[in-house]
Image 1 (cartoon, rainbow, N blue to C red):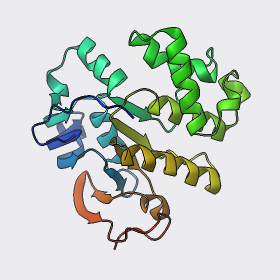
Image 2 (image 1 turned 90 degrees about the horizontal axis):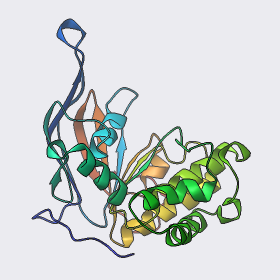
Image 3 (image 1 turned 30 degrees about the horizontal axis):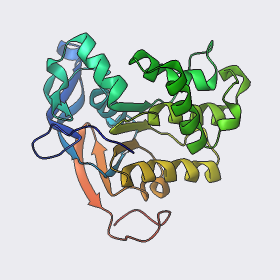
Length: 248
């Protein structure tokens, strides 16, 4: 996988510093995140775990530039997302960030291949090249034979794999995945996790929200959230094949 130049002086793909997110005002204020610090470097696969409402999905939306922090700084490849114009932020999301949503977010009127190639075409890549890259990404997730089907012709698991292919297509340096195996059977889920692991081994960085410790075992590091705060970080101690219990 080819990569773009890292602009962070310490080589990080993703860096959160003192990031908080507050919703509402006055007595209705809800602190979704409280002073989060997180650094993810090339080749790292980070799993984020915690109970419902702990801030896991909020962390991903801020890292992906889909929402803005109330305070603190979010940087992707050295770029402060909070200081970018709307157009510049959209460009970063198209070029550097692949996002896997829980609800797939596929466009119903487009085929699987068209859904995957769309971000590349929006970024100025020719239709032919974008389709070639899309077919390659669909092959990675095991659904190349479904390239010409529309979302309503796919099962939930097939739609999820198309959504993951869309997050991987092109030269994305950062993959953000919110429960990427939620709609998949255990065998297909392991295949998808192996794809994410391989992308990290090739130099990308990934952050995955999961409730399953077996899936977190694929990661290099597990970040535990509770009430919007990091309460623990665990490094993987065993270099053997993934699928064993997460690092203790």
